[in-house]
Length: 93
Image (cartoon, rainbow, N blue to C red; front, side, top):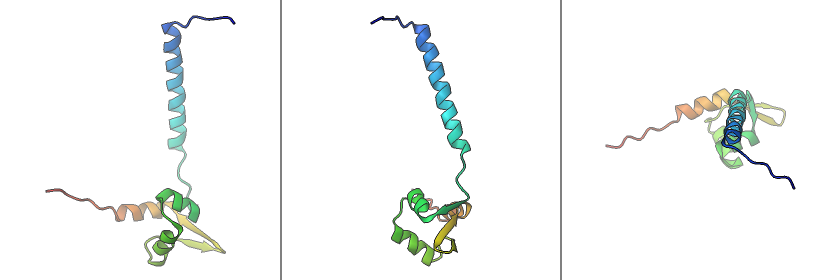
């Protein structure tokens, strides 16, 4: 088995390549926007809530939705608005 010597220049080059790859991955993730319409399973995963909680939020009118056939869709912009409008700021005296 042949051995090769790794120099500090090799390590520096590897580090720069690795950082470049990480930046590319992060850029792809930030560019990938949330879909316009989400299904119930996606909302439950996104908000970390159960199916019953999601149903209660629909019933009491907290979360707007659209039903087409047997599929319920949620507008991602509307969900974000609901989240922002229900934000609570606790102030400590």
